[in-house]
Every structure is written in structure tokens, then in C-alpha cells.
Length: 174
View 1: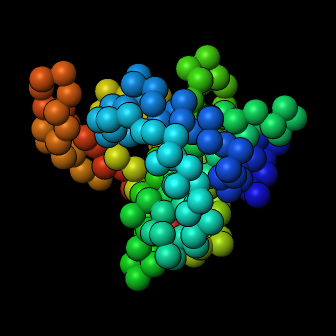
View 2: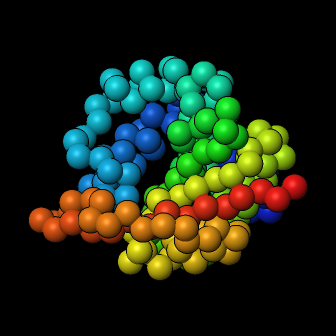
View 3: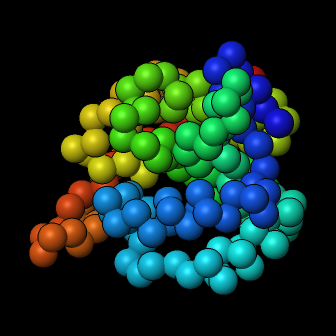
């Protein structure tokens, strides 16, 4: 587990099935995760059965953000597109309950993940794909030094119109 003062990041457990089912089927966040269809409990159960795979095997790592004192799930944070040869990975984060956003949970969780990625996995760089209108995510990532390094024009189709997607990158300068 990766532990901060208020939250910890931990591996997914079979007991997380109901929480992940709710998150994955929350249509209000499908846009951020590029989800288009609901997930069944069966598929999520299968995913959880394989969640033990090493990041080198699965090329991704999904961790649950948990409140320390109550042990309540607060969100999910991921490393994806893990590339050990080039020592890089993408980062995704979600604080699932909108009422919990803006309270520092994402900042603490991202700080723990960035530290883990650079100190333990010895990655050279992390990147994030962010909607240019998502000011909260831009603030979160730039807090840690992620810098805008490109814009993918008309990258995502949403509500009948194409939207840009910004690429943010953090290079570890040991």
C-alpha cells in the first residue's frame, strides 16, 4: 500500500466489486474514461480475478484510493500504457463522488502515485490526456510539474462535435 496522511492507494480486492461496478457504470464519468457501454458484474469479477497481474505483465496498474480512517473507497488511479523499455506510462485518476472533489484527495493520491512511479518503478516519464476545458484536472497535474506538450485537435467526438485533447507530460530529472 502507498500511504499518505489522509488516503492510501491499494490493490483491488474482490470485495471492491460493487464499488467498481457503480463507478464503471456511472454515465456521468464515461466521457473521461472513453467508455461507451455498461459493464456487467460478471466482466468486472473477471477483471478483479486478473487484477493480481504484475504491471510488467498487464501493462497497467489500477489502484483504489481509500480514506485511511473510514476505509471508504474514494476513487481510482491508474498507470496505463506502461512501457518498460522506454520507462513511461500514462496516468488516469478519478475521485468518484463529486462532493469529495476539491478536498485534496486527488492531490494526495497523485503525489503518492508519482513518487511510486519514479522511485519504485524507475520510470523516466508520465503523461496524462486531459480535456482542455477540465480546469480542475489541469490544475491537479500542473501542481506536480506536468507541462502541456501538445494538443490533439478534434480528438474526441462528444455530443456531436469533435473536442480537442491536451497532452501533459512529466519527465523525471533524477
